[in-house]
Length: 630
Image 1: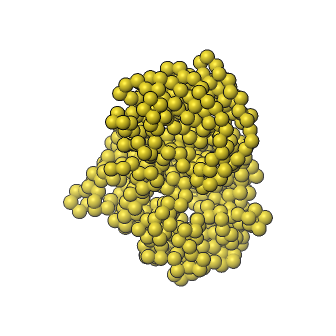
Image 2: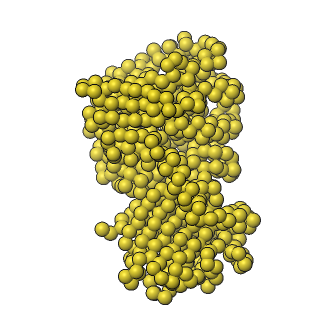
């Protein structure tokens, strides 16, 4: 079976990531090695000079991807030669292991292109330093170093123009690195300066691979056990992919929003991601991500995004601060981390004070007030001007107030918000329900049918769940690839429009969560199956950003963080109905809504510093549960 040429994969550590096509090619400007918003090389290719053959899409036989590493197998005149690729967990580097059945002379061609993420062509030159223990390529933006075992030599170096997809002109320094061995290890390490680049190649490749395999196995071992193998595998790959998007950046820990081009810590995306990290019992990762965003608060705003080197911090997001409060509440409810809550309380109050200034007479908040100036929106549909009061934003506002109110009770205080929350809940349907569906926004009234009407269902705010889900399930929204952002019978609909018609896995997962919550587990599972089928469809073991509603063609980035988070949450919070509150007795409540194909499912959950096994299983027509401390 030929290796697919249109699929990509990612290898990642906490400080760098690498993207390549499964056939061994580097066809787009996003392929290559990246670290903290900088690219360091466009491609590498191996020429087996004594056989006069390239390891290329023309000679590849197979590719095996394990998350922790990738192995490409090539047929070179009847001999198998493999490339094993690996990104260490805490080094800014890529390791390449080339293995043949006998000794060969390998010419490794590397297209060095040290540039910022926003750049294409640049005129910067490279200084080449041929050190005894490694070769250095020095640019004003950073340094790439080459170290190998056995040692190699630079055969040639020259500049080349090329145009990887989508066609933007690039300029790289082509380096020919030559070595002879049966098994060769080549490390390409990077840094901001020569010292850092050299430090980043000082590791034992085999030992680091073993450690990473062990670590990834520990993340998924016993995480979920289910008689539906497809669901179980999608859940486990969601865990691995979230881990690969976690970065230890100069500004702190946080999750990139997606590979390859959302190489920033996004506040909005983090708001959907952090609860899933908590659901996995990874309290420290959740806490540090909350802290990274919180320490950059400005004028009551959690950042829309933070560049990993802090070169750019954007605050134009109305929902990021609200989702941050909701995520903080989720973390506190599971961890009982009162000390952290005390520390974050002033930040929450700054957010609420800033948002109170944006409320109307009904208590709802305004968004997109500076659209004409910014030429972008404040909501997740940031390509659109959605009017002053977007539906999903108001649902988040109500939920954020509820979360703050609950957190103050954990501190033994009364926030006196019950009356205001009840008023907002009462006015919600009055303001947004038009008799058939939820308006996408009011002020001015916009009677558009969008997938945003699912958000009030996720937070338990809607009184019209049955009507909403009937509409979402209909052909104007649901396609074989998931849920459209905009109904197909609306003016302005385009099946490939980013926010006005294409299918997003985010909206599809919202639908799955809502179906489970409101008692339609079969339909919820159908949406999850639509997502799990995506794992091998575009990027290996990845869930893509969005697709054409007509053809299913992938349109966005290959790996989107909130997809993995919502898949985990759909299973835990909505299908299993796991509700954890460390301040309550009992701390764990479970209300499963299992689809018929699930006979038994086991999840491991953490409350404070204790772990529990939760089992939901069928007994005749009933679903029963067991909770056991581990």
